[in-house]
Length: 393
Image: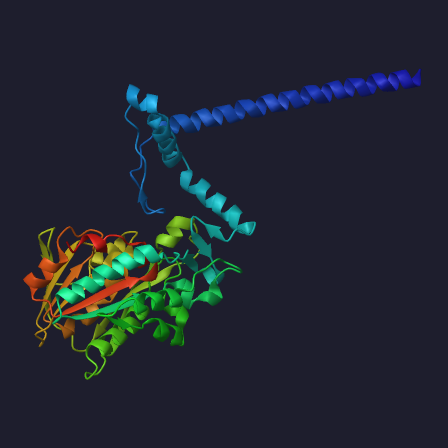
């Protein structure tokens, strides 16, 4: 009898527990549904953000409906991207997810290595011989067509090469020193400048690159400029530079790509005693200024753009230097903070970024009376760049 009562009681308790569990699951489902509907409505009917400051990119906008886009699937794909980009509290959710990933030991997010002492690293690019052969052939052809022009090439390593001690354990890397020397050995008509070893020899290498951005700092640029000028003008003394900090609130592209904002960097400029007056002309924009520095950029996200305001197809700089030499710099963004340091040595400096330039390099060399050419790139960009091959013919 007692066992029957006990069994009935246990059965009743299990029934109550099961009912309570079902009620809890129902309430949880209702709550989740309400939250999803609320967030979904807030996303759809809320104000769309065009630009994400944290991610440093433009966000997806509402897709245009058409039967064709529904049929080929692009409408649903674009809608998914739109909801993902515009989802309410997206920044907080991304930050939380990144924090969880790092807590559980993840050391690579979106192609960014998470290193020691808050250093972030751009994942190195592998060496592709076929692509490099084409690019080098174009550089050699330009040198051959202009035998009286002095041609130089400075290829900068990235922070993974110089700050390897700060990389996460066993992070896959490339030997960028070898990549540079392989590229240099392919050139016969261009004088190659070794800036890799001077960067490695620096007593404070951690100050040569930003923690949150893929560029080198102004200290790294000064090191490069001194080596470049020494090879271009070996009989002249190398200038001394004074570094002036502008802001210590810079968080660059690697922070944006990884979602890790645990550090800030200082953006500085460098000045030398024999500064010369100059005029900066943005050719396609038809704009003229008296400084290579754009201070308004310090108020925005991309503070590295204080140098020239960013990347442009062609910039012409006319100086008052006591020189008859005209320099053509063919470059990526690593050169932006180096070029101001070269101005006192040239009468005119023409800056071309092949990624945006649609003209013909040979015609430009002849038109501007170029006496010296400097190719200035970082390894990752150079190994990926296909635009150089399109600017000669």
